[in-house]
Amino acid sequence: MTPAPPAADRVYMHVKQAVLDRRYEGGTLLTEGELALAVGVSRTPVREALLKLEMEGLLKLYPKKGALVLAVSAQEIADVVETRLLVEEFAVRRAVPAPPALIARLEELLEEQKRRAEAGDLAEVAVTDRCFHAEIVKHAGNQILARLYDQLRDRQLRMGVAVMQSQPDRIAKNITEHAEILERIREGDVEGAAACVRLHLSWVKDLVRGDER
Image (cartoon, rainbow, N blue to C red):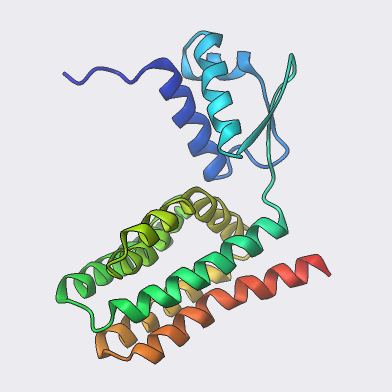
């Protein structure tokens, strides 16, 4: 029988997942008492978990009040997209010509994303979306770059759910654009694949500029 995770870990995962899939939206104030009751633990592991989440930039702690879920700013979105463009365009150029294993995995993830979208599971759509891009980065053959990309994971998931909630039409468009990226990779078209990646991410930059005006 697998032992239960430590209490602080349970609180950490409960809060983090709720922030990432926006059950706890930006601006929500979380109290130690409420979280202790929700997870079924004492307040001590709650404090430990909240401190860790503050270090990760998801919360801001206020003594005797609780923890405020930080909203995603337009600047943060712009910074993440800029980093993704640099990493993903480089990665897709390195990944082509692609081995059969990469193509098969991308096909599998694309079908999974379609199933999750049909079920209306936005959190899992965001996960499979992120996995699709991460698989390409992994096959670029640069472990340092892959680790850098992994550091964007939480921000990508949180932003992905937020965008899909505000612009539901992007779900189908993302799937279509993923299919186009996959087709260029399958064809061995380096420049075409890189162009598809740029197009796929450029709309987010346009959205941010619109928000800032």
